[in-house]
Picture 1 (tube, rainbow, N blue to C red):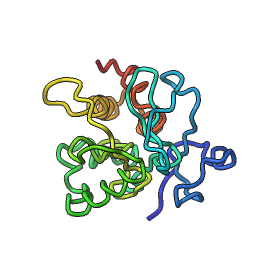
Picture 2: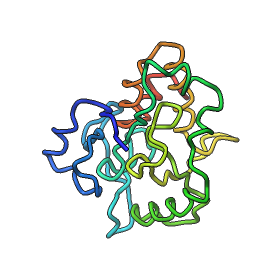
Picture 3: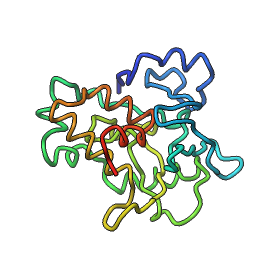
Picture 4: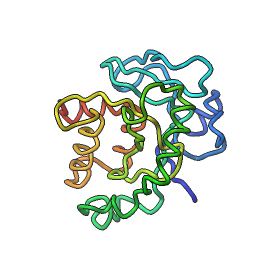
Length: 197
């Protein structure tokens, strides 16, 4: 499967050493640590010896390791066809892999991240969500997101950002490529920009 660039800096990030995902020649956007749009990032704790390490945004939300989960887009979704793809209610159900496929992948991803605790306390999440044209089955777009339960009925704060970004893209207030890039770089910063509380 071919992937599109999420941004134009992939070569730069590859040159500075963000390889090691099993797909180091991938054209997917790599986002390095350091200063993100939402502020400085600090290394969050992960089990020593794990290949992937959580990061923490200044606002406290957990972010994936950009060398393991850089975010990958779905090549069948573009700005030109959002009206027949991501902006159609229920479209993501047509491309979402079944739990029989994703559950073993989730457990493997939890091992890579050194995530401890019951699998039910993690969402196997698409960094660039399906409703923003994220790749449905590429492990470089999937990570074990710890549930943060921001309010009743919502498992993860990121879900609120995904919904707001989809509404903004479908209303023409945010270009699809920008939404994808900002979601991969720092979804908390995108949520702040969209007024998600």
